[in-house]
Image (cartoon, rainbow, N blue to C red; front, top):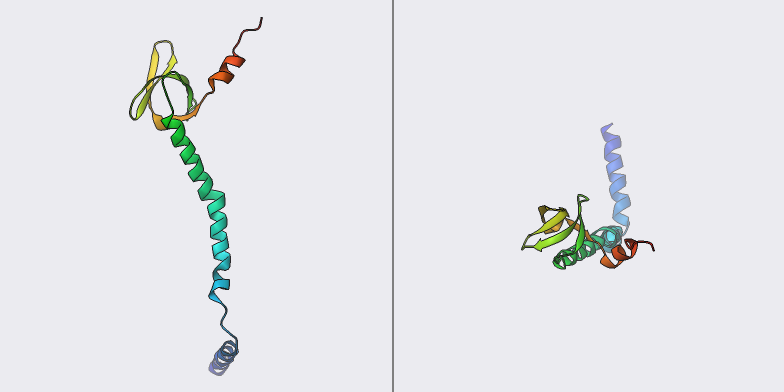
Amino acid sequence: MVFSATALLILDAASTAGAPAPNPITQFAPLIFIGVIFYFLLIRPQQKQRKEQQKLIASIKTGDKVVTSSGIHGMISNVKERTVLLKVADNVKIEIDKAAVATVLDRSSEETTETPAS
């Protein structure tokens, strides 16, 4: 049993000693390729979405109709440094973080859909 294990080790060492060492770049090429794919499919779109959200939050002004991330619809009545006052009904205002604003509704599309029929 000891003889067969030793013979296998000698044969294995002899077979690898004669073969040329593979290029390290070819060994790491699949990992590099996976990293590039990972960047373009996951990281870059998230960065782009984060920039768009920050731009949206920075452009909020009084009178904008917004939807929060929790689904509350309302109109901005006051903009503060980190929060906004959101009017959700008559005499009902809530204070929310600016980061909770998910979308700003387009007023032009709201006006066209809410016009009364003649």
